[in-house]
Length: 221
Length: 212
Image (cartoon, rainbow over all chains, first blue to last red; front, side):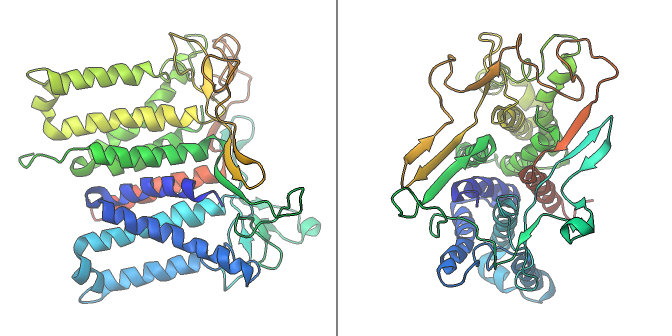
């Protein structure tokens, strides 16, 4: 996974964008907890092979959570969430959902072997990789989903499928793959790799800092 | 210059996060324009040799704009901006300025395309690129900061004389702009950029929901 520091940076940006005037320290706390919780499936890697990035990193969980939130706040006569925490609570729930989807599931989807998008219904890891450009020679080109020769690879559409829980293991410091020269497992904790990951951390810090410095609007605006 | 669409998407998130009570369609339009504005120096490079990622991508443009804005809104006895647009106008101006610096210049600074950060005082492109990892075997490994070689301890692909940032507006070095060359408008270069673009669009759509 891109390290939690990168996810946190991006999550602060996304959550603050959704929260708007509801932004406060408690809201940020909720978002951070929701963001870090799914990494618990890393721990299940000890007992359930390949569970990391499958159990809690799929879109079905997201769909279920969104459905539940929609039902509670829009369909029911009296929303439990709104009763208890008011409009603030509803907005924080949406912000946490946004942070989980974009800063966690989708950012992981674009990283290494990707995520098991439709687990447990379909057990397949997908990795988002490609580019999109407009060229004077080639026209509009996208390489995210490619149509390939079925005889060569056994699949017609290459949407970045990398394998199943059987054969995909996404490396993490808790459940490492590599061994060092002395035979002990080498645990690597990346803080940031490449420019953009450090950038997302920096933007998250900038957002939190700017929110702190900002004054309140005057009452007579 | 990395895709302007990604600059704008980061600008959308930053604007939605920081505008606060001043958030509305017009304010967001100003902030998005500010995120895209630095890339206008690519057009300038057709007239001025090597202007891409230089003329509008240095620290001095936002620093001077910030100083003027501070003087205008905080030091002057009567602020034109405050008179005319009130508290909202000041908030939008400050958020647009930070978006210009962070989403417009900052994003490019963290890619290998690099920006000419201290031009015109010091002519050299710089990029923040590398990795920061803690390994149980090797300890802390970082390659972002490299001392030696250049005045700033960062990676540098060259100066305006030796390095050209390729864009669809001006794909070849200099101002000749030959007609037969392939031009490529990069929209999204990597998967993570697609995630940022979708996140920006989704956040704005959510904040504008229910509005006509």
